[in-house]
Image (cartoon, rainbow, N blue to C red; front, side):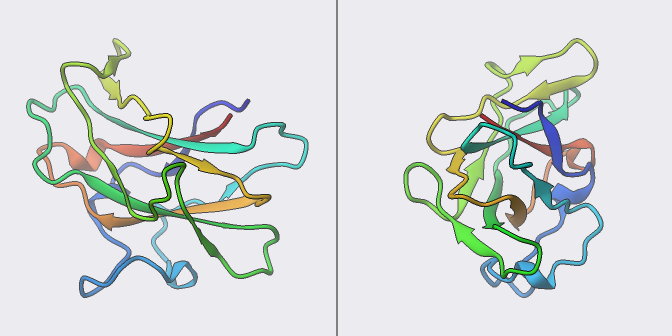
Length: 152
């Protein structure tokens, strides 16, 4: 199992990777510096990629339009990215916070609780992963939010 790492840096959840409302399906066109290709070393035993969102405890309402993402994977750097489906078969996945239930770390941040099915992707033998934003986060403190990932 790995520790949580940043998949999309703070500020990156406020813009989409779709352009003109298209579906996020072209990861090779991504140039936004907030996007980070995640590397799962071969020695890491886990086989599932899980996502959660860290957001500001200053948020006072649940988002009306939650974040929506897509995950891509590839075995080697020179290979093309392939879209991955989560554990329930969805390619486009919503990540929504719940102020009443999410964990507060006591240090100005809250964390969404990953759904074991909706927010989990089989690694499918891939070493590298990239998360694209299909629907941007639009809240009072969206620029403070980041997306985190781990291998379990």
